[in-house]
Image (cartoon, rainbow, N blue to C red; front, top):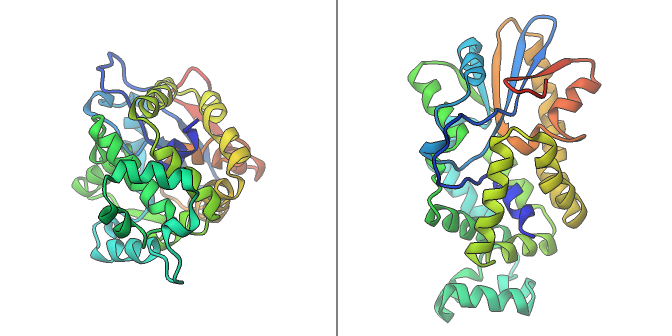
Length: 293
């Protein structure tokens, strides 16, 4: 199963047209002063996933400011690419082929097609290659990172002059992958090297579940298997980051302004998700824009 990889990317759609907007994974958290809307994003989408549900548009209109996982300005900074390249490379003399199994090495060699390409890849950690190979496959299948929900709202906030900021730095976000055990990084790489037809089938299942706004279905498909098979990666990418974000969200609830927070959908669902975590802290959180209120 490749659900762990899809969960890392938090992305996936099929390219067919849809008559109705996606049912949003959208919650409204109410504090003593402010309101925080929590919207679950997929990072690669297509034109067919727009327009958005009226409740999402209403949340955007109501919000004085937006928050994303990373500050939109950082995404455009040359320093971001430099940070990624530095974190992606081994700095202790190890090589990719020295840390992955013979089976994964064979799959990667078949994918890259030459010894020269393999040698060039030796400097990179498994997570970095896995992420890039998977994104490449998804783009070739018709998905577009620029159409992702977060990118959509980053562009709109800039156009509408709405303040936008981030919950973490680029280094913190990438560090969640970089710090994962190499054995779990190899699982990510191996799954990225699966046949495209199999990968796309999983993508389409994920997309249908996301479009239906089926939070329980998404948790069953992804989080449960991720926590079981790659437990440390799950903690680093989901649980630990959510815990770091909670004080910021609680601060927003104490402010006078309303905010729209857009993060990968998996950060919102399940017992480690932001929705339940805020509820345990006494915050009133309700689902909006869905029959599952």
